[in-house]
Amino acid sequence: MKVCIIGSGSWGTALAIKSVVAGNDTILYCRRPEFRDELIKYRENRVYLAGVILPDELMISSDLKMCVEQADIVLVVTPSIHVRTALQNLKGYAHKNQIYVLCSKGVERDSGKLLTTVMKEELSSVGCDLTVLSGPNHAEEIGRNLPAAAVVGTTSMDVGKKVQQALHSKEFRIYTSDDYIGVELAGATKNVIALAAGIVDGLSLGDNCKALLLTRGLHEMTRFGVALGARKETYAGLAGMGDLIATCMSSHSRNRAAGQQLADGKTMDYIMNHTNMVVEGFFATSIIRDMAIQHRVEMPITQSLYEVLYEEKAPQLALQELMGRDSKIEVS
Image 1: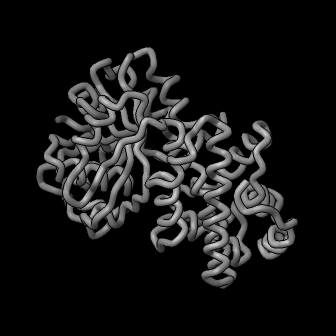
Image 2: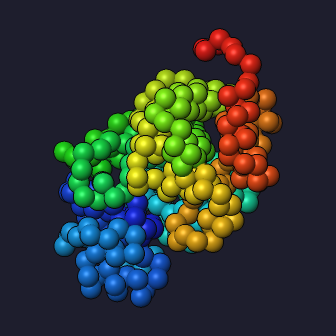
């Protein structure tokens, strides 16, 4: 199988390594020639995945036409803000016999659209197959071949199985799901809860509070997903509970780390201006909150976080208001 990865950040680099491990002819597209040269020279992504040696078999190129045209499977691994541009740039080289896998999590900042919607808008005329990959996947661990798993969301299980076979290896188990919308929505909404988890950590509120947040956060994510057509069961799997746990607990999580900075009194604007990594939860919070209002879905954690981010409410006050809500039946 010939696999092309679009995006040479930490996650794109880690997936390129896993594709090589799985036995594919793999090429990593690097938009900037000077960065491509650095990767080739050092066989290491020193900027985004330091300390991880790139396999000798991994090809690296800045020739988008060559990378895309020869591929059987194309993994799109850019920050959400760049997904549409990346698809527009490669569209002229895409063809109907390919499978495109969305590996980015989040929503489009300008339009508020789901990234799968963006992918359909840009590639539907090509006639290629579209899927989405999600799960508890920190690049820092996967790049080092630590055990992990992911799930492929697809509208065609035959297509999903092809992606599964292409990426599955001893240390990286790939599952399939026909809940295309649920797999994507879970990956987008968990970033919101991860920001809140970082606030809990930053305020030293303890394990009980963290467990409360994750449990109610998962309930909130599920309610939102079901309202938009996802299946409840998906949120008990890798794309839901699995990704939520990893993102809210790990020291690798940029969203959780950003939440800790919020607890320290830093604003969203300050954090964005002092990091070279995209904090997807910042943009997802506003968009998902608006979608929840539109679909009449109650999401108190998301609403409270929106007030912290966009109205500069003190995190301590937001927490007090959440804890002061009327008691209710746990599952209804």
